Every structure is written in C-alpha cells, then in structure tokens.
Image (tube, rainbow, N blue to C red; front, side, top):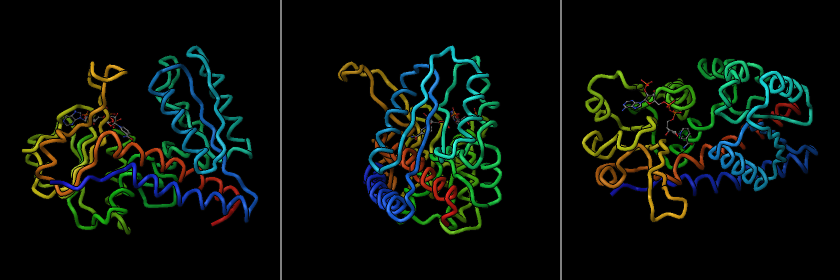
Length: 295
Ligand SMILES: NC(=O)c1ccc[n+]([C@@H]2O[C@H](COP(=O)([O-])OP(=O)(O)OC[C@H]3O[C@@H](n4cnc5c(N)ncnc54)[C@H](OP(=O)(O)O)[C@@H]3O)[C@@H](O)[C@H]2O)c1
C-alpha cells in the first residue's frame, strides 16, 4: 500500500519555519511582511480561498489586507488600485484572486502588477525568470509540489516525471521547474494533454506521475507503474447527499486502486492544496526581505 504524502502535515511544519522567519524579521529588522489580496465578486470558491489565505497569514504573523469589491467593479478601477498597491511601500506583495468577472481582462490585470510584488508568480517577467532558472517568485502550486517531494525525501533528479495537464498555473510551470539543471530538479519531464496519443503508455513510464487535469478518474490503476509516486493536483466536486454541504472533493486519480500500486500518493483534500497555500506565505516573506534588501 502506498505511503500517504500529507500536504497538511508538511504545510504545518513549514508554517512553523515561516513563523520563525517572520519573528526574526520583526525582531531584528522591525519589518512585518504584508500581503494584500484583491477579491472581485462573490464566487464562493474564491471567497473561501481568500478566507483561508487570511487565516494562514495570521498564523505565521504576516499582516493581511483585503480589498473586496462587488462583481460590477470596473476594470479601470481595478487597474488603478493595482497601480496604487504597486507604489505602496507598506505592501510587500499582493495578488488578484482569480477567476475575475467576465468584463475584466485577466491578462491586462496580471500584466499591471509590479513583478517585484507578484507573489503569485503569474507575471510574464517572473515566468520568464523561472524558465531560465533565475531568482523569481515561483507559482505556488508547482513550488508546493516540489517542496512536498523534497521534504518527503523523494528523489527528483534523473526521474521521469509525467505531468497530465498543461495549464499556465500548474502543468507548464511544474515542467519548467523540475527540468532545471539545479538541486531538487534535474528530472526528465513529459507534459501531456488532451491531444496526447496513448496517454496510458506514457503515464506507465512515470517514476513520478502528476495529475492536473481537473477531471475525476483521469488516472486509473492501469495507467500507473508499480512503485511510482503519484501527485494528485485535481480538485473536483462530486455530489454527496451524506455531506452537510451536499458534495465532497475528490482528485483526478482513482485513489483507492492507485494506492495499491503506487509507492506514495497525495490525498485530496489534504495533499497539494495546503502546500499551495503555504508557498504564497513563503513568497510574501521573500517579497518583504527583497523590499528591505535582506538577502
Ligand atoms: N490543489 C491545488 O492547490 C490546486 C491548484 C491549482 C489547480 N488545482 C486543480 O487542478 C486541476 C487542474 O487545474 P488547472 O487550472 O491546471 O486546469 P486547466 O486550466 O483546466 O487545465 C487542465 C489541463 O488538463 C488537460 N486535460 C484535461 N483532461 C485531460 C485528459 N482526460 N487527458 C489528458 N489531459 C487532460 C487539459 O488539456 P488541454 O490543454 O488539451 O485542454 C489541460 O491542459 C483542477 O481540478 C484544479 O481545481 C488544484
């Protein structure tokens, strides 16, 4: 049976480390890291994610500032607020919670954020820096996956990593990160998507298999090599009348059967999710250090 790679436990350990770093910044440098979050509209998922981010910040001692607006908030006002936050020395990093309402151009908004404050790591400058292996804010989900592997002593170097899903926030940046000629990387990476031929033939060659497709049962037992490490990024809601909220969350991997063949696997929930949240805290602390010129 596979070992469970608990993102919840790993994130809790990282919170302790981050809290120590924040305390040190406060005590030695009189510096409190500050994160601002812009939330437009009342998408329940986004509201709950933002609430989680606030809780996480408070837990490690980061100050949190919320800018919340109705769905009809204009693009022009949002861009003006971004420019204001870019210039606000008290804010070290900020994010715009996605998705945005349809009338707002997401690309325009992301491009307006100062890359030095882009703690989500979505600005093309940060993505470009990541691609060439330079110092940057790494996007939270792939960075969290890398940390989860490293902290569980799972070797990455020389391993064949197969990623199913090529989004700009998960699949593509994870491929870029793990292929770097660097410590905690040096993998051979294959990136798959809906036009990939013979998907199962490829996934069966993975030493580390990452599912980031957003579809339940994308990865079934027959698609997994014996003793592979399986990382399930997917978060899918399925109806469940036995639950108070009427649904439960499952990943992209058929967890029960894949458990029997994999050497290690992440659960959903409690796997990649908590790591994603933690890496935003990491970037915010880094942004504050950069701002103060602390290496
Ligand atoms: N836990 C976390 O922290 C976290 C963070 C981010 C996302 N997520 C979850 O991860 C999942 C993926 O999110 P995302 O934003 O990366 O997704 P996305 O933008 O919807 O992209 C999904 C990707 O998967 C590919 N795909 C879908 N079905 C496939 C199939 N049957 N076979 C092969 N490839 C397939 C798509 O291929 P094409 O490009 O060809 O369409 C696409 O590249 C979602 O469930 C999301 O909720 C979780």
